[in-house]
Amino acid sequence: MNRRAFLATGALSAAALAGSVYFAGRRGAGHFAAPDGAPLRDHAGARGLRYGCAVRARHLAEDPAFAALVTRECAVLVPENELKWEALRPTPDRFDFTAADAVLAFAERHAQAVRGHALVWHSALPAWFAGGVTTRAQAEAALRGHVAAVVGRYAGRIGSWDVVNEAVEPGDGRADGLRVTPWLRLIGPEYLSLAFHLAAEADARAELVYNENWIELDDAGSDRKRGAVLERLARMRADRVPVHALGVQAHLRAERARGGPERLSAFLGEVASLGMKVLVTEMDVADSGLSGDVARRDAEVAAVYHDYLAAVLDQPAVTTVLTWGLSDRYTWLSRQRPRADRLPVRPLPFDAELRPKPARHAIARAFDAAPRR
Ligand code: XIL
Image: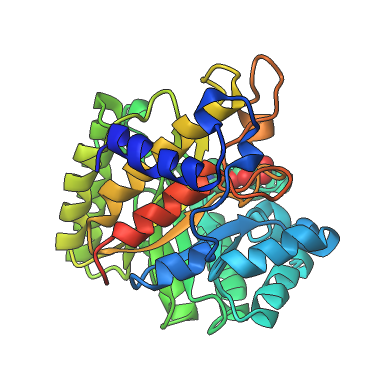
């Protein structure tokens, strides 16, 4: 179903169900009742998919209503920041697992799976890293120590890891398309395969994921990046590097992501033909480029969720969909992409009062229509 058809049949029939005059904008989006109140995890589960979201330990601990929503909706959680180097490595020789352990404990109390994010990334490195890790030998040793300690600690409990995050950036000008990062500068392009091998050594059963941003649009920039990612994945698979899945971040902007992502679909087919699975790892739809009216914004954001997921879920290799947060109460986009008019941003399936939004219904609808896994 295309976006227009979705707006016509999906959102409007839901509005009709609620007896609301949603599109006339006379009542707030909060009155847009759910056509079906089943948790997103159940909509996904019925098709053999998993749904979950990124969470922060502090929100789970301090906001019981939010924590209850996370418990209800999600089959899988990913700590938003708690497993990054910056969080785990206050000094070169000390690990602090307190916050990560809290997310794990929460998930285990509620029988939720956990994904780990992220073992190797150019961002969120602690301040001491630049001064303390300056040679190839030091970088390799740091990587070995980190992956062994972190993946080892959670072996059997974190079933899926983002091993390398955002390693490709054609704009950096290298022929191989790799991003110029501390890891690349110190170790060379082999740092990717090294990281995957180390992760597999620390937990042979974990799903090991290469996670990437800005590969989802039907434009030239995404094309170049997809090309470089595919080349890298194909090479690693040919070299028997244990990389099992591609993570597509899917941080979308509503004003740029209209229409179905046809080229992404074709690309996912190629990834699948390498024998790999695909996860949507960090989906949100920024509304800071849309005009202020809340009902219209919510409808646009919902349409982007629907069209994007409908296209992506057509690919049977896609196993999992995670949103980067669950409620507009807590979203990194409040700081990352604030609105010029200073109205609160509304990029997630539930609003700041924890009420379901059109985006939630759009996601449910896309799950319902997905081919069964
Ligand atoms: C973001 C978090 O959401 C923020 O809280 C933090 O300040 C910065 O990082 N791609 C990623 C995530 O892989 O780790 C980022 O998370 C969002 C973009």
